[in-house]
Length: 99
Image 1 (cartoon, one colour):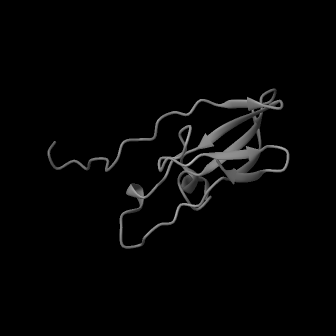
Image 2: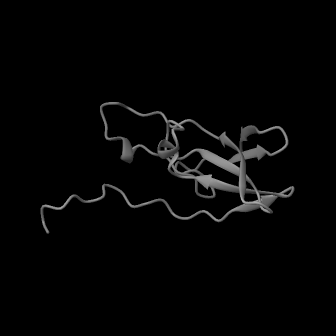
Image 3: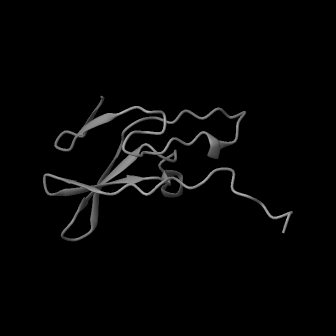
């Protein structure tokens, strides 16, 4: 159908979880669906024994321009974020610093 809506951008690539200090860390791509305020930029700490999410952490802010469509402004986590920035997260303190 030529009149069918089309996605404006492809979905972000799957980011494999990382286990550090007995916790599994996963990227949260669709934060707005979880009322986190932005898509991308969040990680979740998960207890691998129970699969229970223990906490979430915003690694970086996504600043949206209200004059532009939101989905083209989302910045998702890859190994680096899509703007090429790297971050180091201390799981014990939840402190974030740029790499």
